[in-house]
Amino acid sequence: MANQLPPDLSKKNLSEMQLYVTQKHGTEPPFSGRLLHNKREGVYHCLVCDAPLFMSESKYDSGCGWPSFYEPVSDNAIRYIKDFSHGMERVEIRCNNCEAHLGHVFPDGPQPTGERYCVNSASLNFTDDKNGEQIEG
Image 1: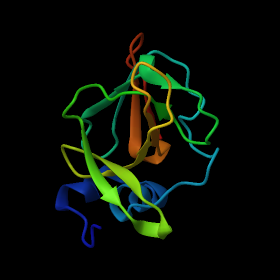
Image 2: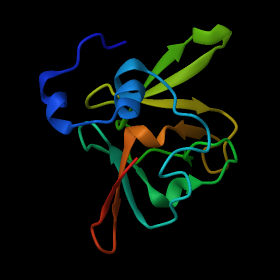
Image 3: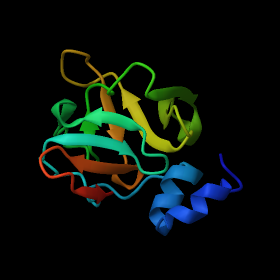
Image 4: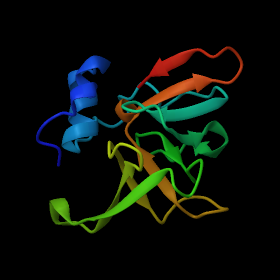
């Protein structure tokens, strides 16, 4: 876990929740995220470094309370780390570019991948394909 924030992160003016999720590997409360019900077409980026992570086409409603995707934008967008915290065995997902914590991936998603990338809205920034509007999670 990050103990000290990278110097350039202080310029981003992240909220307490965004810092908690991305730097301290926290989790926002279920059904509270700003991007949970977003249905626009576009790209979900890392809130910290703006690297593209997920396309809107791969987003679906899993009912879990967090934005869910069945695949990342590319094979090298996400870093996977075994997580044995809280008495569970899970796979943590982080931005492969800046190491920001995103959430976890589970093997109970829809086809074609069968995976559910369960992502905190607070770790994402969405860019609308039609008008370029950005929405922070």
